[in-house]
Every structure is written in structure tokens, then in C-alpha cells.
Image 1 (cartoon, rainbow, N blue to C red):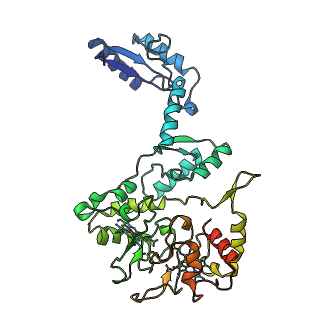
Image 2: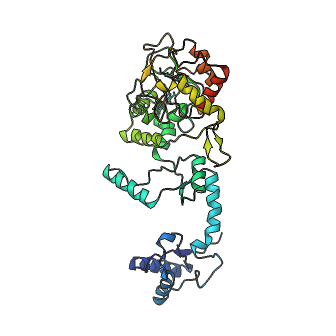
Image 3: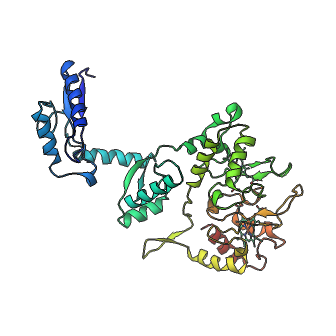
Length: 381
Ligand code: HEC
Ligand code: HEC
């Protein structure tokens, strides 16, 4: 590596060079001259929305006028060109592709109006006005559809949010041996183990739950012992991590969990005509069976839960109350095994083996084919 000092002045052509900019240029120039280095001008012109016609020429003229001659830059050239940032786009695009591929960046489709509205809402609530990351968790199919529809986007870097970091950080825990992600590993989705947590008595282990939509579907926990997800998050920190943490840590974890969005099910199929994803033929028939078997009576609304508790005949003998909170069915394709203690390895098991008494929907009269179609439908949600 060469030891030559290279200083760079990089103004944006968004108007006339102002005094502050000129001062920065002067300091750069003087420093370069003092140490026998190079003074380089690069035009930072990638923000095309703020580009002002004629500003580049004006910039160069102003610098030359006051005697700040640059050694490399537009006009003069040099071996590290191009000196217009925008002419380096191919180079950047290459790196952007790589970042997107490695999941280190994402496309954001929010319009400037969206962003303005977001700022105003945050200000009204007394929160920070930074971007809330709503495009960060768009599913690949949603992104593809938006690109196909020609929606403009910008690239944002995927810096882990504070909440995401805390969720994965075992140093939060007393003795530092587990994080929330130890039991809720991939984006807050569950691993298949059971835990006998103390919030609902002993001897009744429960399958880990997905945290997707927890904040939208109170109460939470299989027994509904926590009135809402916010309470469960704080209880998790205190009683599972044995930690006392500032309220702010819990708040940012809430924020992270709220930002999780469901992935479309791989059981969906692509329409040959429109290219859009839709229910398969079997799943469409299963949707009818979902009604016929009265599943919708409890699995109602946009998240397929009426947020109430029922005894569907799945409780073990150690359970104080036999009634469980109706879970959301969104993304169940991803969260086997099923039922409170994970006894059902497949969707078919939920509908047959573990519904012998018919307390969990009217499935006993259904044919083998109807069961398969119903399972296909539920796994498509
Ligand atoms: C030792 C494993 C374990 C760890 C660590 C853990 N959880 Fe859980 N979590 C569970 C289990 C098991 C359930 C389901 C139990 C039940 O519903 O009764 C659950 C349920 C939840 C629920 C309720 C979900 C719903 O919609 O019903 C929330 C919210 C939650 N956990 C948040 C957290 C947070 C936040 C952390 C970190 C502070 C955390 N958990 C750490 C095992 C764990
Ligand atoms: C009376 C209300 C009620 C009806 C009707 C009902 N469910 Fe449920 N469902 C529940 C409750 C409560 C649970 C939680 C049971 C447990 O955890 O052991 C549940 C659990 C499930 C689960 C497991 C989800 C998971 O993540 O473990 C699936 C899948 C399911 N129901 C599908 C259906 C289908 C399909 C039907 C129609 C055949 C149906 N349910 C009818 C209340 C109901």
C-alpha cells in the first residue's frame, strides 16, 4: 500500500456551493498541500431526485475561482476515475446484488409520502422518526410481485434492529446461557421442543410457539395466561432469562416481533395465467370442508382465531384448565408438530388421531380425501 495521503472533497450537485462546503474543501486542500498529498474532487450525484442542472459546472468553476485546484476529478481526470459517483453505478449494482443475495440488504418500496406519514405518526407518538423497517420483512414473492408491477424501490442495508439483537443476545440472560432465539430460533418461529414452563403449573410441558402475530392475537401462551404479548415478553425476560432489564429492552423486542410477517406457504401454486400465487385445487376443496367441519367457528377472522379459549379434548391430566387459547393458523405449514404438547406430527394427525371425540371440529364424518384436502387448505394459510 502506498503511504500517499489522498483527501477527497465530495459535494452533491444539489445547488450552489455554500460557504460551509467551501471551508471543508479549503481544509482538505491545505492539508493535502502540507503533507504533499493529493486533493481529489468527486461528485456525489447518485441522488437523482435532488439533482440541479448546471450545479456541477458551477461547483468546479467556484473551486477554480478561489484557487482550490484539484489533482484528480472531473475535467482533470486521474487513475481512480470515474469521478462522478453515478458513473460508478455498475460497480455499485454488483455489490448491491451481492448484499441482497447474502440477505444483508433489502428493497424498500415505501414512497416519499409513506415515509412522510410514518415520520408524522412517530412524532405524534413521541417516538424516533427513523424508518420503521416495514419493507424489511416482505416475503420474496411480495418483493417479486412489486418489482413485476414496476413499483420503484431503494436499497436499504439490513442492520439488525436493537430488538432483533436483544432477542438473539444471550448476554441479556442471567449466566448468559440462552437467548429468546434459543427456543424461538428462526425469526421468532419455534423449534419443536417442549418446555414445562412454570406459568401454568408443573407436569404439563408445552410445545414452543411461533411469535409471529402474537402481538395481534391476545391473549397469549397456550393457556392464555398472559393477557397480551407485551406481558409475555417481559415475563420471558424475568422468568426465563432470570434477568432484570430496562423497559426499553422489552419495548424494542416488542417492536422486532411486531415487524415479523408471514411467509407465503409453499403449498400455494402459481396461476398459469396471471403468475399470481393461489390455492391449489385440493386446497380450494379443503376450504369448503373447513366450513363444513365448523373449523371457522373458532378459527375465525383474518388470523383464523377468535382469540377465545375452548376445551377441544387435547389437554393432559395435569392441566388445571382443559381450555386452550385458539391459535392462529397463519403459517402452520411451518410450525409442526402441532397441538399444545406437540403430539401431532402432521396436520392429518390433528384432524384424525387426536380428534377422536369430535370436540375439535366435525371431522369424523369426513372421507379420507376430504381430510387430505382440508389438511392441504390449512397448510396453505
Ligand atoms: C426455554 C425456552 C424458551 C425461551 C428461552 C423463551 N421462550 Fe418464549 N415460549 C416458550 C414456550 C415453550 C412457549 C409456549 C408456552 C405456552 O404457550 O404455554 C413460549 C411462548 C412465548 C410467547 C407467547 C406466544 C403466543 O402467541 O402465545 C411469547 C410472546 C414469548 N414466548 C416470548 C419470548 C421472549 C421475548 C423470550 C426472550 C426474552 C422468550 N420467549 C424466551 C419457550 C421459551
Ligand atoms: C371449538 C373451537 C375450535 C374448533 C371448532 C376448531 N378448532 Fe382448531 N384449535 C382450537 C384450539 C383451542 C386449539 C389449541 C389446541 C391445543 O393446543 O391443544 C386448536 C388447534 C388447532 C391446530 C393446531 C395449531 C398449532 O399450531 O398447534 C390446528 C391446525 C387446528 N386447530 C385446525 C382446526 C381445523 C382444521 C378445524 C376444523 C376441523 C378446527 N381446528 C376446529 C379451537 C378450535
